[in-house]
Image 1 (tube, one colour):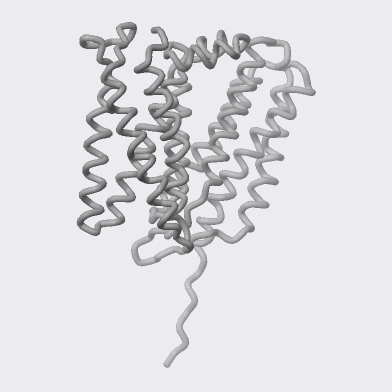
Image 2: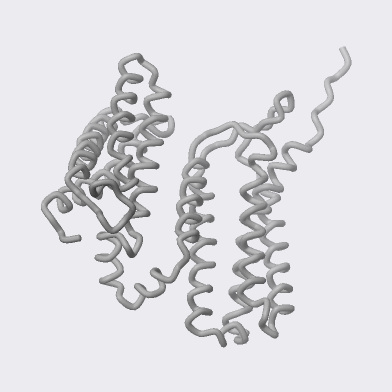
Length: 305
């Protein structure tokens, strides 16, 4: 696929939308509202999204499954237009919460998730990027597609946790436990056949215990409703940062072992990697433990009248 004027316009508008969207969203976060900034960047983002969607109609890709050059990703065009119309309908009716929710979901789907897929080595922008990073191109091309799907899922999950929300005990326990097990799996899968596996697991366990103990003692930024058995959780970007840190660590270790298998038998590589996995797992376990501690804390008894 050549760099046509339509592709140039599409990429420029899409990159602009990716950059302006967070500013528009941030301007409405927290106690201090910035309505002028929100409107300025919001209208700019809407304009860029319309340009992105419209220009996509003039781009054909016959290398992917398609109908007359239209691929499944072209479904984002009507979805984008429908979402924008719906968001402004909510705004006209005074339903600010629904307006904000629609815009957040649209940014997540049309900018973040779709943007990640455009960076695949088979896509035009992906070929440009990996062409600049030629030594890494074979690594990315040989990465199973499910790995990129996992990354997209972690980004979505982390972004969802950046918002204030209400969640059950099971819902707040699942992701930390899953990521803790993911860290353990990283150590076992990387060094399971290494003669250092026992030492690696011991270091993983020590790092896990230390990180869990430290995090579990910190107060939870949440309130537990015993009647509904749900938590009111303050939004935080920390989970997203942790998800990405674990993913990148796992990916980097896997790449290094694929290129240099004997590193699995080097203490200078295997043991720090196992300790890092354990520390990450402990952070997630500690975050879950402090919520459990909040839920299991005895309720103060009322003084007799």
